[in-house]
Image (cartoon, rainbow, N blue to C red; front, side, top):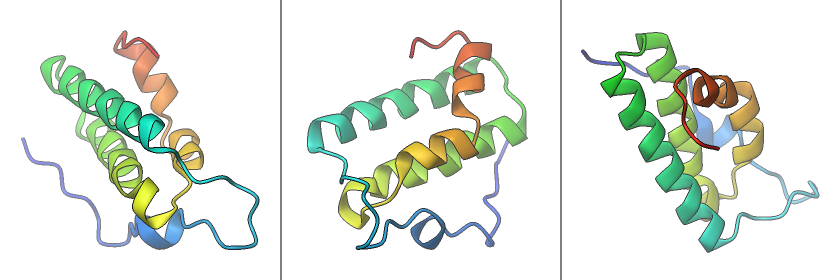
Length: 95
């Protein structure tokens, strides 16, 4: 099964944090933790045969998390927008 990320999703512009925003940059330790968390979630979804739409949501959020430190992206807003908490609860992943 292949998941195709639509071209219209540009995480670099959609989740960019501007210089006037009061959102702090993700620190390296949190960044590494969030990457591990997304990796585990993605594996769990694949093993438990999640739908393509659910996999797409996790992949989109993972793209934001991976680039959050270097490009100053709002990974917390992506977490909410992509509904990651509901996927973690549905697939019994510890938060």
